[in-house]
Image (tube, rainbow, N blue to C red; front, side):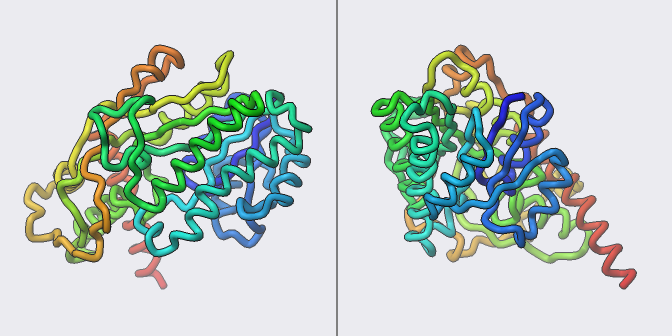
Length: 332
């Protein structure tokens, strides 16, 4: 039975990846900072077989201890401060966790394996935000990076550190340069979930309006459940490498709003959405669209959930959730 350790197990990707690995017969270990984390109950409900181990991406000894407990064949580093907007407000912490955290996990593997890093296969969650002010469109594995946020800078550090350990220590270390990927499990702070939740609440009469930033920003959005499959496929290859994972399509925030409001039978949202300067980025990333040709040809991977279906899935989930919450509140 293969063994896998996942950092960021309580996040969207950690939950989908843990489910996937458990279904493939893995013994799955999830790293948590402490047993008081309120999301632990959700993790244990979705992945009943999981074993949780304590550790912190800011604390190397705790990561070495987690390696000793889990004895992993594969390590997936998904842990990060992943909300881009927050990274300007907490730039130092973002650097410590999203950037230096990668180095600490790699060091923990090196120490655990006594410098034979080929024994453990490592996946690093890199990000399309590393491209930032894009140099070419679409973006490939060879497109130069120009990050435009503390988050993007930290991810770029982690990406190059992964490459460095691969070249310095013969580590089986891969980076997945994942473009935006969403699901009903996405946090409410992310724009897709912020929109779908607000649309559900507006349609139910629970909310009057929605405030957003740049409505013309374009992103390449896919389904998180598809993207964790690409992560797993990367670690099953004969040799480690880096891969762009994306749909190859781009959509604006306006298109996101069109699809979400149409799902609840509302075609004109112009009076329901306001632009708020608080939600504009200090340095905007206007366009991201990936070319996943390499992932398709080498990994045999392709996305299965199109944009419209993804947003409709999220709206439907939020409608169910908000109806239940409203019903529960009415009974109190």
